[in-house]
Length: 405
Image (cartoon, rainbow, N blue to C red; front, side, top):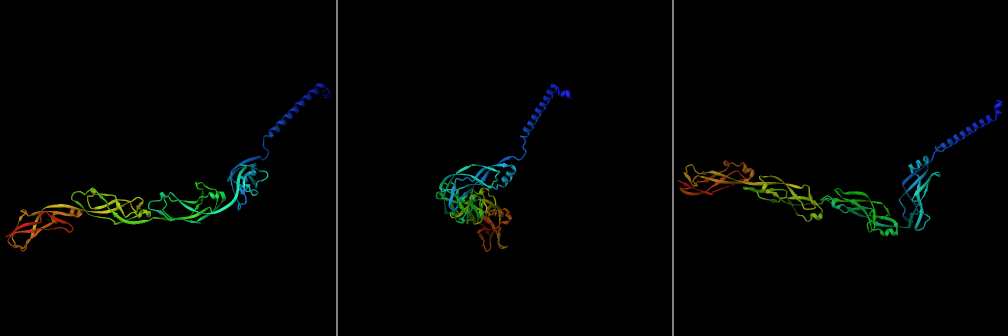
């Protein structure tokens, strides 16, 4: 062994091996450290973007008003995830512009934040804004009620005068803006409205002369409105209209219908109306006494409880009965004969309500002459015709000639 260590070549070989081992060791250690640098060894920073974060204003609101401040800004938070998560969930920080030390006029100010931990950074967009600070002005204005879609109010309904509580509101803004105020309104949509509105809360809107919205503070922001809804009515006469002609041998006896009808509409419209007509009844289609339904010809802007009425039409009918024997009322001892007409018969025209005429038979009609107290000779005697009550009977002859022997 001692001889090996004394050999030059042995020592050179051993030195080379140590050099190779040292090189490999250093290379491996370097690679291990390089790989460790790519793997997170603990919590890292994160970014959270919050849009529509309310932007507050710090200013003496009793003395000044400010314009140009956006309602919302975008905030990007940077910090550890464990810290950002509760902040994003609770939004327990403030974003604002501080105008308390600024005078009236135009200014460029920086958007600030507070109530964030030191290890959280906020980036705000926009970072700066242009604002205008003006002296605060207040003024009272009456509230007008504007009715919309009044043309779509159901026919027959009419709205009354609205009541507003309170009747006035206070507007708070700069003097320049207050001078632009032309209208302070609430709106009521009355389309298809049939019931009164009672104490409905409505937001107040403010406009300039061109109808543009004005951004002012309104005190109070809403008012209550009540609106009466009425249904005016009027009773007017009903006129039954007809057209065409009845069939031959038919005649109208009567038309029975209500004398008046109640119609609904606006008062101004009703004042001009005294009569309502029906659509015409076509007499050519009337063949018997019956109940008929007629549509109403309602004036524009009015309605009735029904669009139609029922009427009772009573029809008279004519019917001829031929060869009715003429009887006589005379003493049993009286001898006579009817010489004119020779056949001793006549014809009768019956006239009455159709249902009576339809039931009438020839046997129901009696024609006779009264011959008592007549002396011998030729006599002209009136003919009597009788039948059921309510029927008019007209014989074709009024008298006959009899010979008493």
